[in-house]
Length: 100
Image (cartoon, rainbow, N blue to C red; front, side, top):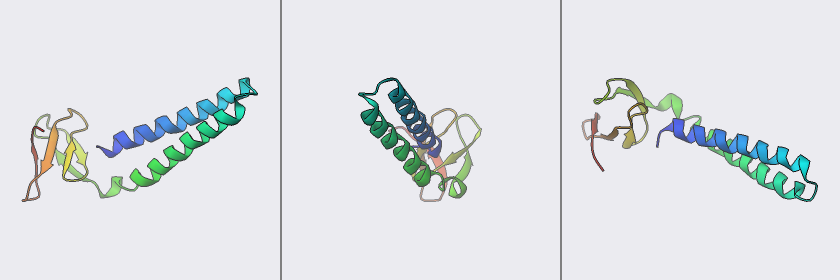
């Protein structure tokens, strides 16, 4: 999975957590539960950012063979962030398209 996808999910967790905590303002009975659930979402988003934030500088940039645009790939198998073409790292150190 691309690092950008993980960052998008962490952003969803962060905003979702803040939204849950904000909803707790309107219901005194649900306030403790919504604050706990919102805090868990915020912590999950922060942990994802800490895990996948530093990945970006070390990511290799290659040109996608399908769409020709530059994309950043992580790991041995990843997909183009523009056209979603699956790519695999070969023994020679190049990425080639493949079908799962």
